[in-house]
Image (cartoon, helix red, strand yellow):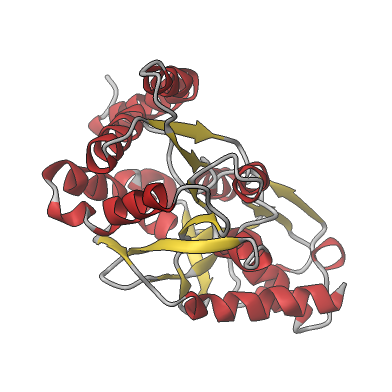
Length: 293
């Protein structure tokens, strides 16, 4: 008989697959009202594609904004960022790296609060019993990254290597992208990768929900605190009232029972209005990597 933890894992795996199939149906339902819906972008690189979560988020945003909402799911940050900067999305949950890379084209809507702060860390993880203490001990590894446009899942490690005048393709024996932080953890836990770069928030949440997975790994090194992946919108918007409605929905999410349910599923405390300058540390890392070529 399967344990309770395995049942939960199988349930979430099923819901994740169902969400990928049914998210378009959620979107079609919004568009069938005849009113131009608010288009909100998501990517599984950061946000788990749990059907119940998607449904609750869409329901809350529709009720809070007073408009139909279409959830637009894509596999990578690059795809979502391209839709956002071209004005095909009203807003999207992206990462700090694409936000600073396209700062002239984007504006900040809100930043999530985790442990009551708009901050998180990047983790370098390794197999639980491996003898290693720093990045330098990972030379020659097969290393798992999450996404080439991820701050925690790529940029932080790439910048740390650039500070040493090193590059991933020469420092590591091989690298690959999993396009999901949980899959970075799985790669290291299974031995497919010797080490990985992962979002610390995601790692900690997975540790709570699937401790049997993260128990096969350990955190080798945590980065400094960095600005949490934000909700962003195009800098040029056709209808400012739609922007304000989306912004208000996120900032007031903690004041609404349905909004609080979404936050609980995400293990977040809420969303806040922050100065874009909190992303300057990420911008500095991006500049360092760009200068290194």
